[in-house]
Amino acid sequence: MPLFDDLARLFGGSRNNFDKLGHFAQGFVPAMIAREILIRRHVIDGPYWRNFFIVCFCLAFSALYELIEWSIATASGEAAEAFLGTQGYVWDTQSDMAFALLGAISALLLLSRWHDAQMRRYGMIEE
Image 1: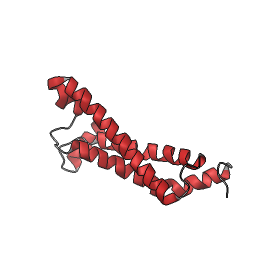
Image 2: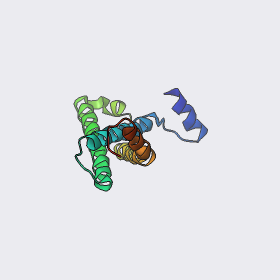
Image 3: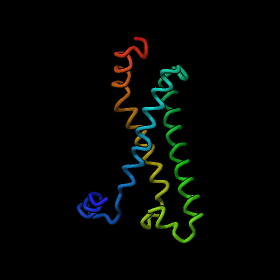
């Protein structure tokens, strides 16, 4: 992604971190989907346990993605480095998962109240 090449140069970095935005979204979007399902289905009523489960779900989803990515890379042989796109960063997998964690927590902190208000407004949950 050329924009992220420009940002790397602007901030003195050597990596294109476009994939970090994707991994952030990989936590942000599933967190809100999981939250809505758990609330509507009354799976976990308490907000603290529900948020804990949502974060765990998002981390599991991210880990599954990383395992699939790793298995494809090992199956492709010597092209693994190019496929993974680690750009020489040894902690790429861990930082990808950290961005998914950050995305899930951000979604819950930024959107939970608004999400609750919208679900009340449309009668999806009781007041």
